[in-house]
Length: 330
Image (tube, rainbow, N blue to C red):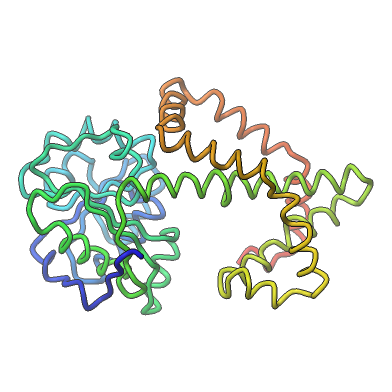
């Protein structure tokens, strides 16, 4: 079992005289920055002046600066840009400003674990990773609650990296819900696996396959959409609150029996074998090398797959149906 830290285990005073530089004011950057500032900590922001996020940062009362200046001023440098941009930003703007006593921080371990960023040995390197999007991190904080988070220490040059990391976690509300100790390796590999096999890749393909099966059999596209996509939220919400067993108690006996007797025919031995193959690709760095190469080549495959996906009939039907349900826009 992972060790779990709570508010009582963290001391915000550890960071009182530190400057926290948030590199990237996207959804996660904004959520963390506002929470840290509201916790009484000194926060500065780096954002590109031409980006929409720059204007948002100004509206939030920050004075955004370029990454190099933020890294120079910051004692704690948290990189919250997208994974594929981090290594270049680090090399061009951050690396030269790292010195003994500073900390380089992440909310996802991809670039450290796969060697795209190699910090000097005399700086701390740690991670605080909220298990939820930045908007949720912010909303929960404002409600006096928090989103569970992960803490991992990659380099402890100062001898007190964990104390600073836990103080940071407390500053964003993570220790209210519980901050779980892990490693960069474990966080990175399980995160990629979850995205590819279940949360994004597995789910999106399952939705489309179910939709296509019903439509090909002559059922109305609208009925296929409702049964295979729209109602998924109802099930996921129950699982989120009560677990899989709790969900089974909340659906009809017919649905529960169908779950037990038919589910394993969809997620079968062949599927599990493919899951293990995907995990191996993640563990060996094959996926990381592929994704890094894709970005260096201008993302031709990524762009084509995105365009093809957006043309799928389920997207057209879904757009029309969602337009008829204005309450969903909230």
